[in-house]
Length: 273
Length: 273
Image 1: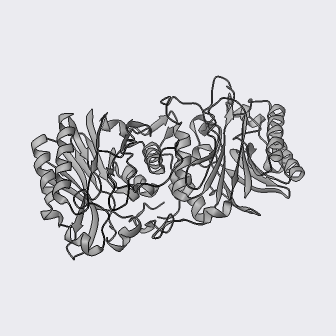
Image 2: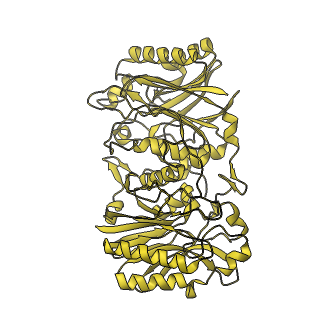
Image 3: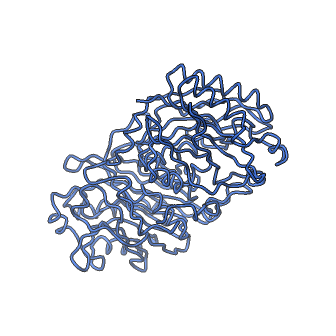
């Protein structure tokens, strides 16, 4: 059983030091709760609501020298944990990517670039062109994707077919109206993605209004049956969610004597790509 | 605006006359509420919990002479409505299919054979090998799938990519334990399928214990944003849900200035089939 933590953080665009401090505080809190895996929000170093691509560029770093990734490496070593978080990546040819890294005590194990860009991100970032990574950790196989990626069932399926036990998902979910008695649609999609694939999904959103944009909150850890193990958070405030997750349990896709979530697919009948 | 009805019916295996009468009553009630489209449960003529394939065979009919389809044709003409319901189909080569038909005043417009079979259905039925149909009706484009099909995001996507505005889904959801404060996972999957594709989904489940099997209920009509327009039903009893649905609204997949639910897909990166 591994304790997984999803950290909902208060972030601010253009305040990388404050953002790093918020992340460090939450990682410490998660580690104190025994977390073996800690998930942080999307664009956890830079903030999200850029005035322009130029502003985003001033807040971007190459993965090899990102202060955020260096901090996560240091904290992963110190706490003996694994950290997944979003960062504003400056690519080798000067492109900007909305990326997430998986970092453990040995360093950066994977960098993933968001493939499905949301709204004005398209004016700032280059979309990734690689599938979600799969990282073998002592406690299980972990994949990574970012925010709007989760809303493409093909992408979640791709990670599950590759063998992911858990998908760690940094997000920034801009608040949208929803019927008051209903869970936000983003949360429902995460639950369904977990259930149809039989995987854990740990989602860390941010909070705190940024340049007039509010956030859904709703950070959660969903189990392979789709029901929340922790969260969804319903308040616009920082939170550290934790849940004990037996990642190996996600490898059993059998749901009845005759049914298997993945083997029951009919790929020959599905749309090409 | 078209009134769509989802009818949760009390059915009994081996009582085709009683089952037809239950369907006729609900169709009449839906028509009185102005329904232009009425959805009935899976295997609405035969019931579900067969003792054997041989028993199912005694309850199966070819689509061309099915008493259920004949009844729906008569009632569709009488009420000026469209009816989608599940029936136990005897195929031309003697196979049994877990099928659904879409019937209007002109007759049977489509027969769909469930492609993803649940549990012991695999011992009785031959899986379909055709995609969900798309039927052009005066009020919109309607597709049809059956129960467990809904739990394959590829299948719902296929219908949406083909141009479905609404998916009519006869189901029989055997009850499974779920946390008491949570909606059943099947309902969550329907909501997510509607939201990620921007389509209406109308689900009609059955009720009433059959040979020791209880049912989830949970019939619902979900809008293209994934939130329920009617239901989910929370009781093990018959119900006729109705909701006004502007099917053409499902053709607008734009969700922000820069985002389109279907155009944002990255098919070149998705798994083949």
